[in-house]
Amino acid sequence: MPNRGKKGVTVENRRRVLRLIENMTMGRNAVGYLSESLHGAGSPQAQRVLIQRLFDLENKKRLAKHLAGIVE
Image (cartoon, rainbow, N blue to C red; front, side, top):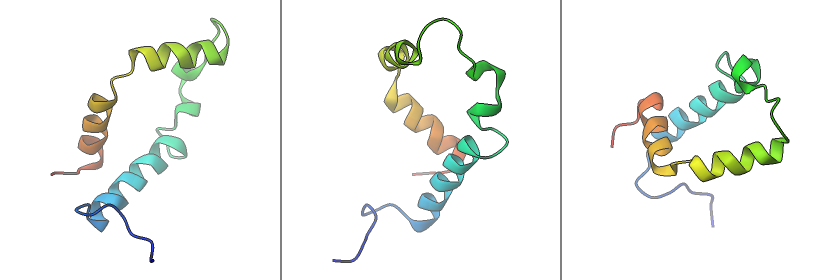
């Protein structure tokens, strides 16, 4: 069976999401370049636990689609 994306998701929208991820991880907006990404108040694992507790996944999906220019 050939590799296929999710039915109903256009190639253009897939490209937009990949470009957003590229920009956030390697581009000028990469978290590693921001001073806010430095953490000096505990272990990285403690930071991950707190972020997961406060994380609103559906809102983040909506924001990512907005940033990527995806209109459904």
